[in-house]
Image (cartoon, rainbow, N blue to C red):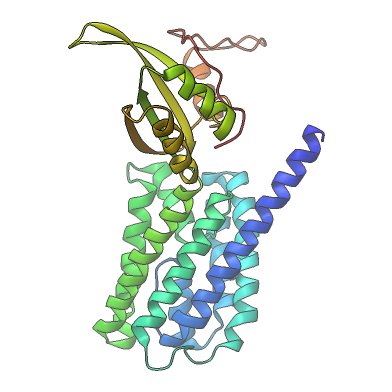
Length: 327
């Protein structure tokens, strides 16, 4: 398969997963949260306030407000961010328009907290799924991106400030502390679930193995688990003897199998296991560093047409090949 076809299939997969995530978000919002008259953060919260006060459907207000923000932010956040966000808000607003008329009452009757939790879980999973595939839902992300460009306030902190303000303003409409508490519960659950979904795609395990049978263990891991090993030469400071250390990276679901392989060969092996979020480099996920490279080139004052060579301060000796399977 050609590189071009792989890029097309990769982009198609991303858009399918973004649409699936937005559909999950829209269902959780319109079926569980909106009928309970609870205001959550983001542009969906502002759209809910407008709907409760004036009766304008959330699809219309959500789409209109996002377009206004994008028009303001066009020169600040860049064209790429705007184009990606337009796709997200258009899809999300269309889903709001389809689903809102179908759910005029809460699905779980007389269980406000249950509806809030279920809706927040679905919204968090949906947003996380969309973000994990380079999607965007617009809303307060646009405001945060604009503010971060002109101040030292981080995007995450700005989103938090904006969401707290939106949720708290619902008191002026409903005069109910319960609604505000439910809104903050949604904010916490959505944030936690969203982070969990995003990090799950990158969760990996690193094994550090000390064993006299390091050669047999390395061969077994490569042959049976199809994972690569890196051999590190060390010295035991207590015994002053040379030791061989194996480093292994694998998916979290593969950790049990690799641990069993180690213990089957050497029951007395000394093993440490650590969770890592993201493994980048040869054979694993690639981290794009275009912006950092451009900044580095700019600082060096590169003015010639030839591409500047990036200097390496140190050389790393590889003692074993990484597996070519992506983590």
